[in-house]
Length: 212
Image (cartoon, rainbow, N blue to C red; front, side, top):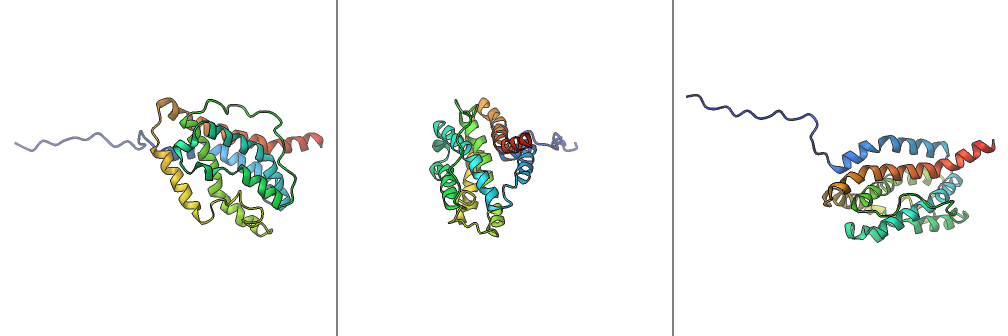
């Protein structure tokens, strides 16, 4: 009697489960491109003056996001959370670069209350990803005289530990247990954070266009 052949179901081309990092990267790609385009249009990294304007624009939002993360218990997910706070570095960089203090909040930022673990991880994906990419911008501005110890701490807060800090965040992102509602909040929260940064960067461009 011939041996029985066990038929296995076909392997799907796209797995039903995808790492959170992959879902976040794909789901925020368009928002990321839009923000990059706005940063280039505004000349945020074309000169030290442009960089000072950029820091002043994002400082209130960075502080507000960090406040929301603190209130939501970010340190329970990432024990090194205090080291990841960067709002104070923006203020220090502005002083080092001779710029005016951060612009005040024109209004409270929406949607920063009642966060849970999914909101925390989605927000940190945006903020820590920006820090990872900041090293490239720091080198670009280095040609204009920016140094980590002189105006460049926000772009390069971790120095040689940049890669390690990113890996530790990715471990938390992938390994933190999330309830279904928290899992569902990951991508919308990351998109919402990108949208807030787009709004902050776009505001002066819109004002300039209206004045013209």
